[in-house]
Length: 392
Image (cartoon, rainbow, N blue to C red; front, top):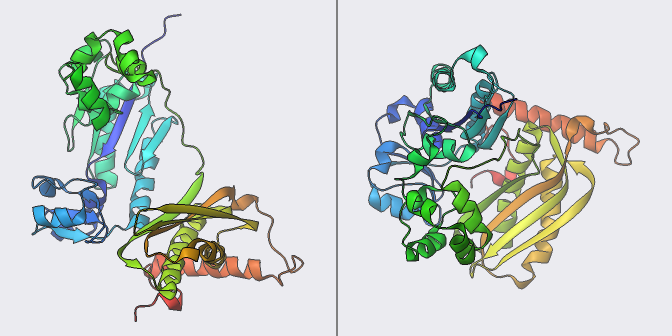
């Protein structure tokens, strides 16, 4: 039986975080909107296309972004809101195929092979999905259509923003040949430098090199690049797996030395992680504390709990015990993060009772957390929070 070529769509939201901010505040439309961390040490998470004209892009230091675009509108990230909008978008994708592989909050692969009788040609389906996202969510999404994940991802970036690029079966090599070698995923500065020494500037140059030379120069990566240059990518679209960890970290504007301030920051991190765990219906058995000092030396410590939890206080107390071990040297602290791992579905957890040895405290804490979450979702995330986190 003749096997038909796969039909893969890569969908990538346009400047997602910045676009959500503009969606929620239409007065920002047409302005250079830049979402990112603190000015001194933070980096850009997303920039509107108006900001990109001034050289602002993701991962650029915020201080540099302000110099490039002093008139820009600089906003802190609102991850809870981005997760909410992402959930809406992924739900739309799943209407057309169960084979959806999210890569992040704002992009995903869809395998729509064999859906032509239901939705028509893949290019028309991609356009249908783009219209649906625009109509229901109010945001634009760019799409690439191809027979492999590799080519579909490259194609989706060709006509941003709000574009659609289709690479028909059999035209993969012709599509890739003129593109710069940096277009291939996995080709970073070091690899690019080695390829340039071989006279490789475009993907076509790479495709013409014998695979033996690439393997001798780059090892196993050379074999991958040889296939990638010809559009060969047999990776399947993998349905989203359950989260393996939930975490949050913060790079501080100034190095921290005051233990009280450090513990306050730890509490803020624990509250964020606890809320995300509860929103996803998860509880954690293990807490991991990550610290990075002024000299960029990094440490990671973990603690396994007696029982799984999604409680802010329990996460914080575990973090404090790890912090006591970590800060023995008391060096100025540049970054701190807390991650919950060894996750369990909270629906599978046995309900706590008065006979659990804690006087029903676990059960009471769960009910309190549920009530606080509902209130904060209704009236704003800062409506109820630990008194320690109130501004002075």
